[in-house]
Image (tube, rainbow, N blue to C red):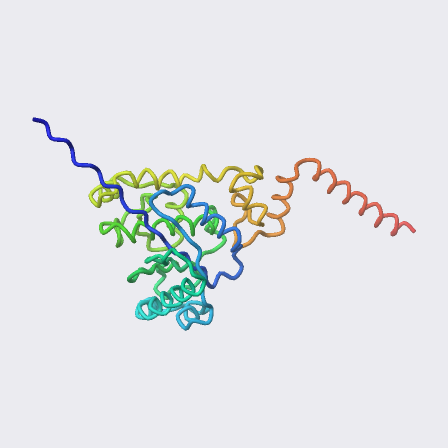
Length: 288
């Protein structure tokens, strides 16, 4: 008599609360749009943008322009989470909302940890510290850095095997341990999950998660910035071209190139005509 195989349990959807703090110079509107777009692409995680109190002592510490001690930050996590969860529960009760707050959070900041680490995990909180991100690290853009690192922290919240640093060698794998943020660009650009980490996810009862992650990381879903209906096109209209912008915000030249791409040859001819007319006016003035 053949026994039926036991049913495969479907992993529970993991809700991740996203807090954005100390992001001066970053196009936050574009970043928020891309973060919620992950909800359309990822099926194992659900992301929600949550308010961040800039007056909280913990948030103030992570808003410093000077390097911050990572272990000192770690020591303040438990108290911060207690305060923050109390605040969220008060808001939910005040507005008579039905859904409870998530139990895991990712705090995205431009703080610079003094030991050069760019992430930290403690309890129910991950902190992304991108203060040492520089223009020369693009491509990819800083927004793509954030998306990729948010996915990395999401997996850390559910996988025991991949909760800590994994392999020394840089493979372009989402779970690379990279000593410097500059080398993390390969995991952002490549969108890859190595064999070791695939097996780890399978052992943790997440057999399909590696493929899901690579699909999201491939960035094919972004489309082109010239397509107004694609995510990349919408982000471009929000003022950040994913394929041109190298800094926290576009330079004048990058904005010019983006406008040309969006408006096409017609606008270019208008611009050239305007420059010629301006030149003629100046020339006629000198002639007189």
